[in-house]
Length: 183
Image (cartoon, rainbow, N blue to C red):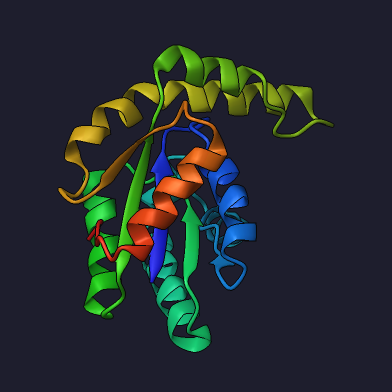
């Protein structure tokens, strides 16, 4: 099974996955952003967003399928994925491989997202780059907020302002009850 934790930049995806790990020690954590970093080293990303690369989407799905099939363990995926076409492409590949996908989306108000992004340091040794990343994340907020209406119909929306422990409890209860989402 795959538990995809989606949401805007700064919504708490990684924090939620970090909270889930001790409660679910057999789960693997797979960050598709790493696939994007590898591709950036190999090919040019004309738009600046590696999600626009068809190869990124294919590799993300293929690696997720491989992790589930090879290791037979649940996989936690913290990744913003709000383009409906891209989400459909990836989730379809996962369900075509007969993998249960639980898709959660953390909803957080714009003001809170901006505060969280401003409070983060992405590249502490490179302040100019840090500021560019913050600016890029903030520029994507509106797109991410609007995308909530285009996500798969069985996406489970969570209040991203709740404490991570409460969110983890909600995710675990949903997953353990067999409530299927995403795809």
